[in-house]
Length: 207
Image (cartoon, rainbow, N blue to C red; front, side):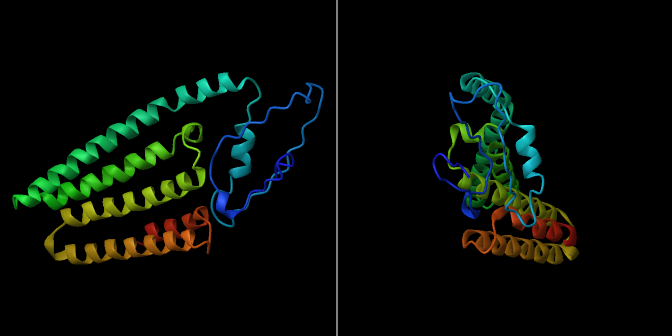
């Protein structure tokens, strides 16, 4: 709760972001009390510890420079992977138009790279400094990793022998269906997106 602005955190604002407070009334001799509450029933049980580990006191300009430098490598890698994904998807479309074998495999790899690259970008530590849609970022992050796992399973399913391929494809379809249900439950506020992670991990273990 930010008592100065009377803003409280609720389920719809779950996400990672940097929040800065500037108060000239606080001196070095003052004691600051931070009351923590973790709203997640299942996922991200270390949220309070993450907050305590990442508290920073000092100049905001210096902090911004540190964070932008720290997240630079992840942004470069994520952007490069997404660029590769676009090239793979374009090649898959080209193969499909010319009826050349291998288009499905390229499409699966392109989709895998696209969602993996998106996850890499959305998981950067400085994301909220250049994208303030932190609730959207959090949902997109989780959905990206779900879809990346499904695409990876699809790539594996297409590479195995024809006898077992039908069963593998059914498992991929079931995984995608469960992911869609979990995403819809989050979108319609039945549970927050972090709380779907426990069920998603169980799904990966079963499949």
